[in-house]
Length: 198
Image 1 (cartoon, rainbow, N blue to C red):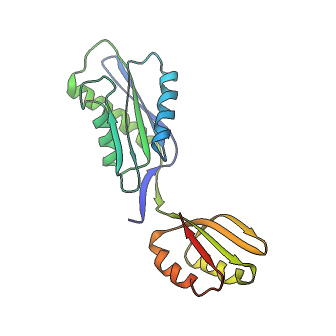
Image 2 (tube, rainbow, N blue to C red; image 1 turned 120 degrees about the vertical axis):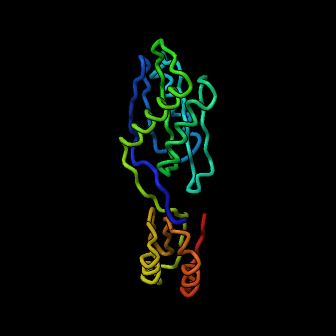
Image 3 (cartoon, helix red, strand yellow; image 1 turned 180 degrees about the vertical axis):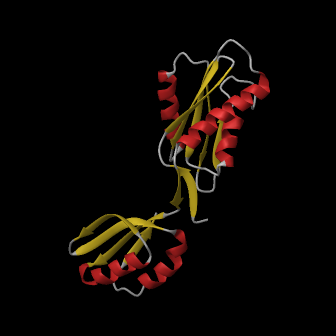
């Protein structure tokens, strides 16, 4: 696996059914802590709403995920939201659907449709982007071999995030895992060059 799909920016969507209003928010996220931050903010913003149902998925391998019905009947809210995340093959995303009850019960099938539709609207309103899977790399080398080191950085498409050039030099950035074995072999040929992966 070399890449994954996520959303580029936060977005919103909504759905109405028999007086109930469902407002959906989609957020790009990097870890579980961000889920709590967004949920707390939405609970303050929509303090008078009946439910704040959500689902999220994290990791290039989509290994971390959760669906929460927040008081709605079991599997009628969180799962349909998660279903929209899965059907778009997204990860590193949180979708929260806030419900204002309109006085008429929608039934299980009505709830499933409403939460699915609202989540779909929010995802559709964002831009889906492909992100490359990378690892952090730090390269240290003596000043004399700068040109050789920079040639290696270019050849293996290392995205530089920080660099220091003094008597001893250091570059840190992102490398795609598929390039690691060959990069390590070529790095051995440059005298004084040290590499670390995080």
